Length: 153
Image (cartoon, rainbow, N blue to C red; front, side):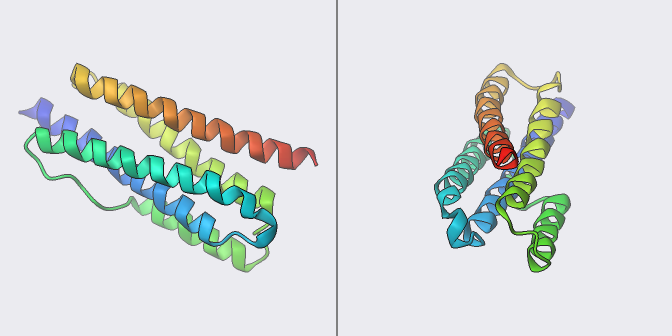
């Protein structure tokens, strides 16, 4: 029973941070100025990827006899508020946008690393998390490459 509770806790944490990621990319996409509109497709894809992750994770929670968490983390909400404040004070240039997105990507990468260190996870769950982690890592690397390219200009 304790094993199942820990598994559900780990899955719900990942649901929340994927919700944060999706909402963060939705917000960043909606706030883009015309000169950065080329980022919209990238941001929309990563948001969609995280929503798909949430659906998959919620199914795993349900198979463990629990209801999935549908919320966000407090830190994710604070991060989006910080992006709003920063944008209001001139921090909405391309480099700033990408740097804030990378900070969010760093957080979700850490969440997956931490989750996969849990010994209680079954093989099916571990396989799903590893697949999702690959997508998260690819997203992080893409954002970092865009940020680095912008910094080089």
